[in-house]
Image (cartoon, rainbow, N blue to C red; front, side):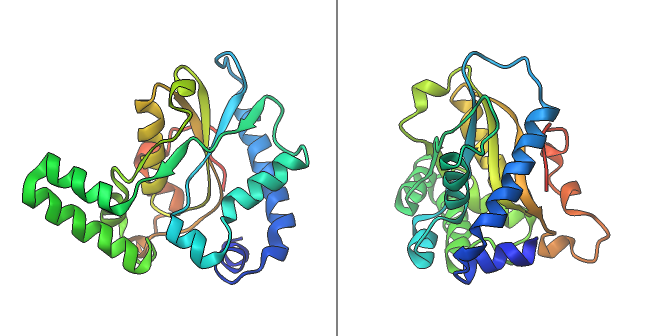
Length: 216
């Protein structure tokens, strides 16, 4: 699955959107079956992990949203759910300004190092700790802020490596008053630091082992 996703995401094979969307739909249905409620009033919100604007420009499309939009238009989302792109990436300049305001020059230096490492090569190649630092406070709620209070959500991503990105989305949603039922991914892979350690990918993000509805 990881090889297919790589071809779809980074090598322009949008022809793979059909089977990948079908696979994602199956995982979403399985996740909802494992999380039968009780839920809050209203449908469960499927919140995709946002793609950086630079990545979207480079590829010419947003891979995860392409899959979810395809499912949505075909009526393939689980019953009782709705697609809700409620979280957005913050501009780098804003992140650095916040770090400077909150932590002074030391905090700014640490944040700048983490952010710039991510920008040079994305999160690929970074270990668990540096991934966490690179995505911390990198996201915020978009226009749906008021609509998230008391709502049940499931985070959706394509690949799970260390759980840092999913963790950042979880932080944003819970801070906005939502309840996160779990996270759903299409594939999982080990971080560079974990390769050869004998640990499986789903053992890495310890804070998410207990979340219901995790697929990969």
